[in-house]
Image (tube, rainbow, N blue to C red):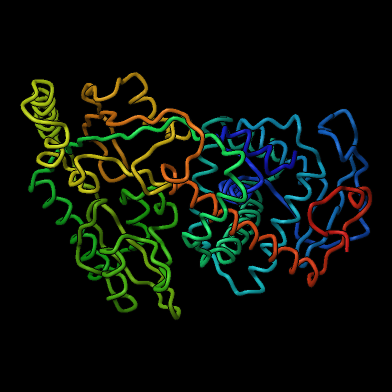
Length: 488
């Protein structure tokens, strides 16, 4: 069994065959922000650790001498990097019993090959976004471990800054690898004829099973913020702007102390926007791109609250901006009104005075679902079906005890846009586990056909790049049974 298949198995994919290997590329993309640390200094004279390559060897009683196991372009892979891969997989709950050092080593070679050629192709990444993600990672680690001292001891680093610097290197490398993979497959599509041929050749004689799927609808009621609260934050933002312009106050300091955007607060509200790659909501981009260097915008509204933006610098297509976000306060009175409203809606539905769909169209505050009668769209497949085994855990917890067409009790929820909201949920349809059928499951089969085509494109790209990239495999790792031709 290949490493790709084993990792697919660990996340309980319901249909696994040789034609779904491209999915592992997406899985590895989820791991790119993990805190594993590698070294980018090429020294081929270092000692290579001697260890079992074909078994899962994590025996800490053995003394290993860390050394360079491979050089790929401008990158190196250390023997210790493989140990850290095991640690990261276990931390995510994946079974490593059947995963060998050779398999993880091969995965690291692929990562470095992608990153090396991303640089050669002038692919850039948002370094500010990476540093913001590192802040979130460290906060999460501290919540688990308890103190920075323990975290530094765990990763054998002598200071928080050295930890952050090393995390930045590996995060950036992983992000480059992901962007390179995306570039390879971004224009790949499949025609209906290709889907039919794929099904007949690969699936018809031995069709995969598709898991139980549900269609879920919801009605959302959001507390309405009083105009007075909106005016308060608009007034405060105007005061911030005036203080900066008239008194020379620091916009950065105000963003650090007062902004409700926790992601950018530690960097003084800073973001780098690119005109060719939209990153923020439309309203934010429009204001940012309309400013001159040094100019501060008037307060403006997005779904997240009210902002002011300072344009620091324009660098070609990139705009360095700082912003302050303030969220109007949600009063208890508004919360009580929203709760009373959704209680009445539920009563109307239960008493059969209106259907769930009719109530959603008339009363729901969620514009993404209200006009389809509350039907939720699966963000992964862009259709209305949610496979039970892949459903978001929070959503699963809310519907797991519901019978078909039963209305949930009122649920209190929240997200980045609406910290408080109330929901009603119902299961509108259920499709039990079944073997793939071309007509019934066309969209899923199309997705598999597209993934197969993407995998072949990546495989072709990888083979071509291996042949024209400087690659050196050291010591015992040369005896690994690789899928690709790493030993040239």
